[in-house]
Image (cartoon, rainbow, N blue to C red):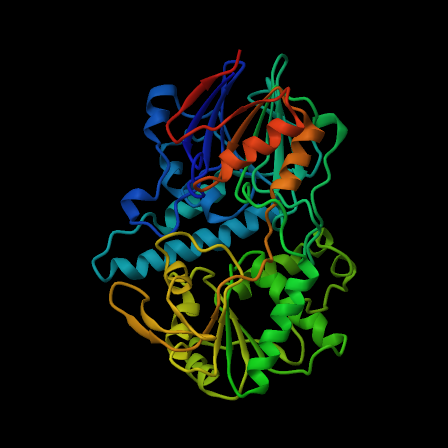
Length: 459
């Protein structure tokens, strides 16, 4: 077996790994980097020119850092190469890729060159094939078998276990061991233990334990209510996939329990389309949502409503006190950046950050502005053309992570007990810190820290 790390090894972004196993080539995930210039977004596809194009492509989950480069790759794929994913991953991927392509089409009118076109997205969808949970899928005319295992994280996310006659490898993708409001946590089957190789994420590899989830949910609810009762507005810029649905249900349940008064909650951006996908796959959600009636609106209520159209955004931002949940989560374009521009200058308002902010993104820059008492103050570079004078409250992190922490990842390695472990998908010291933890609890596991461009032969 040989592994080639085209991207996503010593970083969070552009996840893409080529596996040579028993004379076949399998490409797992084809992502882009977020918040960087377009010429730096892609994995190193030149490796495919040297080693050869993949025989099959496998996708762990739909997030753009795992799927966003598919439309760039697809034009070089032979017609018979399939792209395998769970049905939910395919549905979410379609929404994300089409949104990016349509945005690129609009930017093209301003003289910018898009990364890919709507036609490229359509070509990706023609290659995609659905797989079922725990159902062994023959690859390369039966030379290999791949099985998708629910990984928590987001709807449709999977670990993928690949085995041949002599070798086996477990690709974790992104995992959440703990249950979320939307998605049950990862459960490891006995039959995928002791693979020759395990490639595992290390996003929170230097965080021993996440903060208590219930306490963080209550803190978010309390902060939102405090601002609204004082006459302000709350913007929660949230990832369209996963985090937005979690935040919506946190507020919805608190209202249903009578924990907080009812107030207007507006949902905007791509979140609306992803809510529809989650509802379409409600049988895969956590209780009680998996048992909801077909016509039940899981993510909406009499006070939680979608913004009807783009023209209503100014009204929503200037009307009565309310909470706005909108994408993008890192304030890169999307309607959340427009709301932030309108709300950031008023001390009564709160911008509540609920997810990871990649370095260089507007969300990361906002987090780093200086604090003056309870308020964030300073000039915020929202984009190349827009600078905003910030005077509002900015809460930089509510710990609502959909990634396993170091303790959970170490426990996962203890359960799986691979012969060799490669730690990827982590910034700065995260993989190194996690290796130290793993070496204490699983001393017989050979732990490697690959970098982008590295290749490893597994003997």
